[in-house]
Image 1 (tube, rainbow, N blue to C red):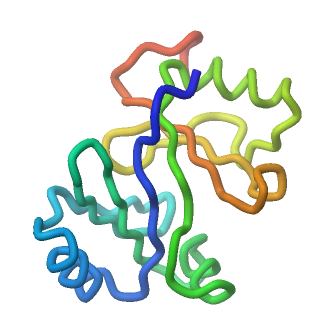
Image 2 (cartoon, one colour):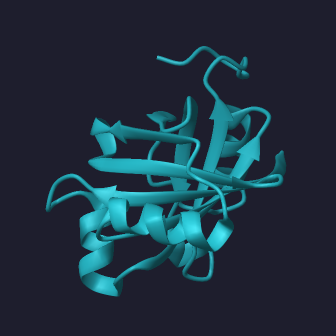
Length: 142
């Protein structure tokens, strides 16, 4: 079950400059930054009350973020929804006819397991499902 919007991902060309911009805009500094090698991305997180923004900068020219920036430019990349049980939610959404971009959850930023839904089936919006890594799932992860 989708429990709430976990974060909104924003693709940026220069994370340092974007950190400065969003620090001024939100009047708060990012609370976390990390590189996710498997996704070819460096991330930076801001919190505004219960809402989180994730800035994403490509670390290689063939990463998904680099391709997004080349095609669409800077801007909203995805909306992430928190789920109680990522495996059960992935199965439910497959049954409902949604196309998953990965068949098993992958490690993501901010200590999450993640799975993406293809934007062709979600009105052009890339949807991310995310669950805390230490939270139990409906079946063991490989």
